[in-house]
Structure formats: structure tokens, C-alpha cells
Length: 101
Image (cartoon, rainbow, N blue to C red; front, side, top):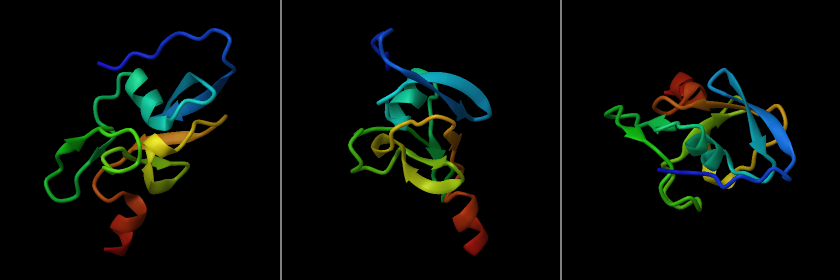
């Protein structure tokens, strides 16, 4: 279980996560935001479709890949939220790479 500590003093930004607008403290990573919002998987694998979620939280394992502002295969744990950011769960290799293959 992932729980974000409350911080009422932190400035909040609006982020769109899978077509839902959420308020997130500035300085939060996309992976932490997704977990705090109850998202259990951030992507599926291209071969088996198995669900994956943030694991290492430091950019090494690549299990947290998401579509961020229309760009597939972005490491959610290494990307900080910003106002108006659009984040989506990634299916397989993502829309842009899927078109190339």
C-alpha cells in the first residue's frame, strides 16, 4: 500500500490521470501520484500483457513506464508533475512505437 503524507502547505497542481483531473502537490513524481491515486498498474508488457507498476522508484527497473503528455515510454518515477500534465496508463509498447512495429 502506498500512502502519501498530508502536506496542506504544498502548492497543488491539476494533472489529468486517465481522463480524470486530480490535484497533486507540486514536487511529486508521476509514479507517486499514480500510486497515491490508487492506480495498481501503470503499464502492461508488450508480449504477455502482464500488468506492471512502479517498483524501484528511481529509474532503474523501467516498470513505471507511462504515456506522459502524449509521449510513450516515459519513466513516471523520474518525472515530476506539472500543471496541466496529461498522464495515461500505457498498454504494451505504447501508441507511437506500436505504429512503427
